[in-house]
Length: 110
Image (cartoon, rainbow, N blue to C red):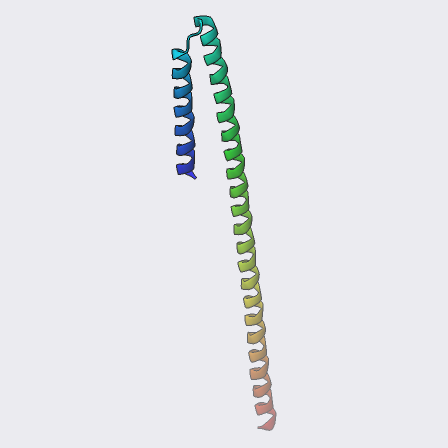
């Protein structure tokens, strides 16, 4: 993502420099030339702002999706741990009951 941003920024700067140079070399009056340059720079700044806003929105969406995935994964792991804990407790209860029953039977037979 950073490489794309650098490339876009370089293209915008290059385009601005080329346009400014073209305007400076064009046979226009000074006032009109300054107006044309100001207008072009305003358009360029607006375009850069739009691109920055779009990139920021994309990053926010990506971050939100990553957080949602992490929450989902964590929730799944918690549920698995609960299930494992519950089955372990139930197994232990069964073993204790079986042992108690075996001891009770042994005592009654003696």
